[in-house]
Length: 165
Image (cartoon, rainbow, N blue to C red; front, side, top):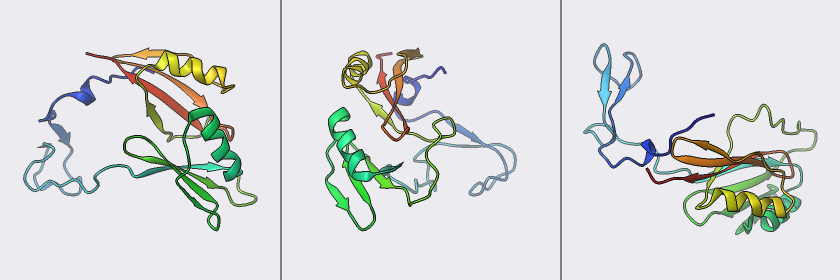
């Protein structure tokens, strides 16, 4: 899988995004070009607040994320069986225990997964290996170096380093 990290870091104004006719919120026929921040266009959301990961046993998952990734729970709701683990910048992870009898995670079917930013993907991979985490191969794309790994419940996670363009 090839990716480009450089395009996402381009300074505003960002490149125009073609929007096909008939897409809600577009007024003209044919292809309309929208620019982020353009008059009349307002982002509905500011950022991602949290990413929910289903787990079998949330206290055990909290312990795994603390021991393997160094993330600490700052909010625990025993009634809802969940814990929130904030990251240094931006979003948090919410570990939410599956209800009894709910199917386990099939990593091959997991379409969405969090990607952690790291300054050194190779060092992060080596650290996770030393901590006994199942990790994939270090891969390179256009402007990025990344690898995937899995938590104790089989959730797919990724670490990504953005390279200088």
